[in-house]
Length: 275
Image (cartoon, rainbow, N blue to C red; front, side, top):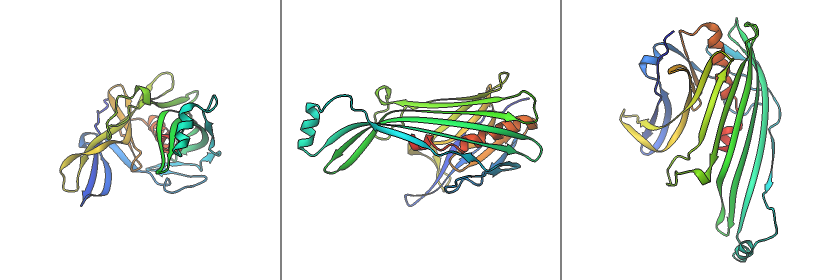
């Protein structure tokens, strides 16, 4: 099987300085050998969402409550710096927030089905400064982890493990400019012990206006994730406009795995709220 490399380009329509649309454009070389599917069921808040794209449909997602905890990281008494800030009606606090979420569901295409069990955790440390002019916060660091067990029901003893992780440490961040993209570390993959699928974010500032002219945005945007085996792309998950592409030459069992990975990533709740 030959996999076709793909490059994702953000297309953004701007009229009179007003953003009208943002789309992911897949090159014809890949699009002609892949099936694009619009994802429905993700709009708005739903307690038990149910999504579908192409021939794939999930059951109602069984979710628990998102559990969060946090507080001030004070380890000692009031410092001289804090006393001085209080004179000017100001305060400077380090606040850590921890969150956890889990959910499970099944996905099927009418013939094949897989059960999926997901767990995500996030931890975020912020510095909050309160002044007479308002409250200002900046992120010092965060860690986000997502794992999922994918259990195809038609393939005996084949379990896929999905692992996704990203982190940010401001002390190590070299992006100091006003519009610089923070240096966030990303790592993601899915494996059944025999095959490895890399999950890579597509972050771009390349844009195309409504007039067809290419330009750049002030900041880079996380538009999509690509799923790769070796150097070849087998799927694309557009997290911005909620679309999934699956490479046509995959067998039906592998297509189900790609659909399972795509649905799990799209159903996450915590990552965007912490990044």
